[in-house]
Image 1 (tube, rainbow, N blue to C red):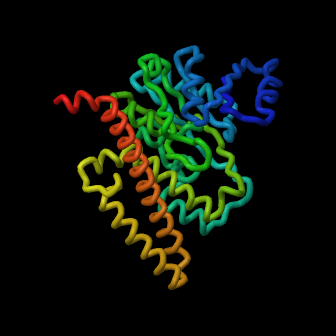
Image 2: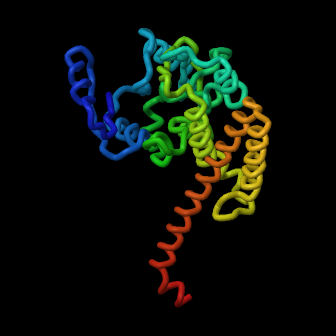
Length: 295
C-alpha cells in the first residue's frame, strides 16, 4: 500500500507501472503531513501485522520475512523495529560525522540504529519509521498517529512514529529489536552539511517538547508558554556560541549551536502549544459567555 501525500509529480504513474508485478494499493491523501498519510493508509489495511517504511529506504530481500518471524516468535510484544544502516550518496566528512555521533547520536539526525543493539526488548524511542512493524490489533483498538507531529514541509515537530511507540509503551505495549530485519537509509549529499544538521536540531527539539518535555515542565514558571528555565538555558547557549566563534573553536561552535537550536526548537513548540491553548480557551469563553455572566 502506497499513500501519495499530495504529490504533483509522476508518483501516481510510477506506482501504477508496478501493479502488474506487485500487489499494490495506491491511495491519495491531499492533506499535508506524513502522519495524516499514515492514518489514511490504516483505513485499508488487512492481515495481522502492519510493516512500515519510507520512500528513501532500500529493504533487504528478506526484510518482511524477518519481521514476520520476530512477530511470530515473540507474541507478548506488539511493536517491532529492525536495523537501519546508511547508504551515503557521497562519503561523509569524518569530522562532521564524529560530532553527530558524540553530541546527539545518529538516530536523531539520520534515523540510523546503533550497531551495538542486540536482538531483544528495546526502548520504544529506538524503533524508527523506516523499519518497523506493529500488530494490527493495536490500531483496531483506536490508536493512531498524531497528525500534529512528523514531516509536513520543512518546519515541523520531529518524531512521527516515535510519538506513537512511546504512547503505546505507556499503554503496556512493548517493543522488540529485530536485528536481522535490515534496511538501508539513503542519505543525500545535501543532508551532510553543518547547516542541514543544525536545522535538524530545531525540529528535533520541537518533537521532543511535544511528545515528552512539555509534561516535565507542566508546573514550571512560564513566559508566553515557554518555561523560564528553558529561556535562561537558551541564553547561556547563545552566549557560549558567540564565545566559541570569537575564539575560532570549530568543534565547540558546532556543538553549542546544536544545543542552542535544540532549545530554540523546544521553545518554539512550547509557544505554539500555548498559542493553541489560548485560542481554544478564548473560543470556549466566547461560546459560554452568557452562562458565565449568569453565574
